[in-house]
Length: 577
Image (cartoon, rainbow, N blue to C red):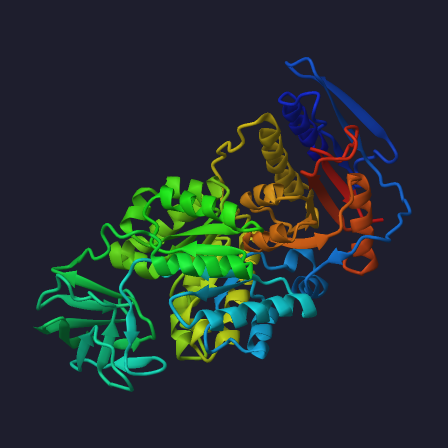
């Protein structure tokens, strides 16, 4: 069966589910010289079981038209535009990058270098620094976006109910050497105290001699050799790097000592940080130590009443409880972060790769973006070159089709943040190219997400659109969207060509920054969808980012000004004339 007949059959099956309220239409322009359909129009009329008429029209050939471009601005960010000019459509990176901002990369110059390197989302860990510091960083990022044409979203990450090291005797990282003796105390000390660790109040409750304090999930390990009041004297058994505000856990006889049982997911400090995030207009809030879906829904409902702009809630999967309730947590959230450092404390290390892939697949099935985080390039906290194993780990996350990769200490406190971003970018681009060349697109078990008829139609159109885009080898997919729903549905299937999402809603643009393969553009859209399509394509052509003969597939979930508009609930493939 030819490609053309395949697509007609697809449209026929889609039409059966449609009603009078929706028009399913496909306009296909082909460059295949073996199909002699030039200037022909073929109309198909299909009657559904609802006795409604659905018209699908196949038009081959492009009529050159002149359009007025005034009143429509094209909001391309400088990084995507440069990448498109340099590498073309198929060379554009699809895996997104999240960078944690810390003292090593918080200057205007460093933030701009990270943005130029491809940072899509800037993460602020509320465990560290003051709110004033975070406020200054957020405003620097927004100024970069506004004045220099970047599109970098802002995420804050809550601290959660966990034990932290307040101070370890140094303003930066220190090395814990084997057999060195350290004092762990809750007492607030002034000045520098080497080999003294200040932790949260109550950190030693229930801890016994012989227990093992573990730093950041295994960066360094100790043994409690003496308990003096509420203080612990500990001997380093596994030497390693001790970072500021490191997380502290305790082990006994090979099992984790439960310390946070019964504590709320969001502490009093977390709620104050959330209020700060609302006031500063952040785009994402990542919840630490989520154990059930109720806490996610509670925060989502709170934000919907308190925030003037939509803020997406990401749930961090980092304990056994979250794994046991994974699907309900994914369904209730706007996205997921796989926090492998803390997760690796609670499950055997050898299970991490399998669990990571399971989480990614569940997120794809439920159409939620997923970030793979923690220790991707851990050695680059100290060294300018990553280990080969780390590059292989990054490549595996890309092969599994994670939406985004995240740097933590590598960018926040390491001296080689720009190099780390460059490594992520190069490794991602190479693996994406290899997967496409080897036709290794992973099969996604099709789980129907839509409940209403219109949602089911949109879902089927996106599934069919990706198949058409891959089979016809179009150069790009254009989607016109208000809230980003169709853009995310397209991203879910991981098409070969990049997805350009045109929206007139800035919050939607910033949220789509986390979706695999989506380049969000802020555009002044009108009520006339067909005019929007024509004007947008002409604008991109005028800017020299497409050339004659390039083909694009177009879909839209915008409600048209006129019910007779053929651009609504449709698939359109155009060749640039």
